[in-house]
Image (tube, rainbow, N blue to C red; front, side):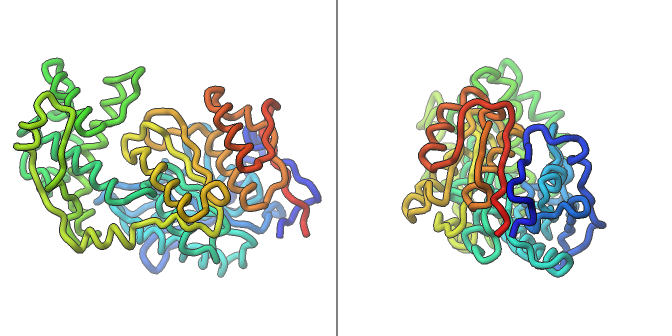
Length: 423
């Protein structure tokens, strides 16, 4: 039940400073798995009875287990403050490991709900919001535990096909070795511990200067085409500095952890045909070839696979030129939800035409959250949504809103939601 007056208007896009300060975080605790958790509550008397859980994104293998503070607060928005300012309880955790931690994250998030319930009572509703790795944690959790999670927002996650995500970085690493032989020492798919430990410094001092030297421009352009590196057409080289660094970091720093976590080497390009170079025949003849181990393939196709079968609402959003999790994941997941009958009725995909991973405005994040609440039936009206969406997205969003019956109108100075009356 919603503990509120008959109609309660909550302005999201410009939360007053007083409301933003009404977030009281309890001392962090430790789950049985070793995951660190945090619970933040609204000001006394403001709790509406429902819980929002934040599932964080990827952390490089080898980094200490900790709650990533930089993912809770982004410029212009701290998730716990906004969530608590709206009357919801907030909870998040670190997961029990870094690196590839999708299954661990899923288990730890489920356990976190139990911990919250033991400490604060059974929430009326539990909403799960996650980004990047937390996006697939959210999608899997909402699919598999509709008895626990009322709805979710999965942002920029590898939700369409997990082996495709492994292939994206594997293909990038294999073809980099062809275009820039010897720049990264050793076996491209078995990096040494010393290289992994010193990767950031080595990349800055050696790799980046070579790759972006004017004399390397032709090779860089070919690699971009072959490896399908996303970039911003308005800032080609600037955006490639981001794409290249991320591509190689995942391939070097996180490959060994991924193989260990999946129970075997996961990447296979033994039959891959690469295209886009000045000499594709030579590229395909000389590129390093590897085969995946069956245990890893089995794990990816079972434990890490979404189904698209949704009992509860799931809102997904993705930037179209995401350099870490390719946008095609969004399209593949929509095909899954279409095949199960969940598309539109329970799944709403939102595309943001922009470069960079999880590169959303606070308004876009808030809009997705509001739409989730509407899909779940928690709110009765949405108005003024145009004020927080870029003008270039209004036509497409308005069309989608009409399809799903969202009470959206163009115009208005602020975004407001009306909570349904308490039964």
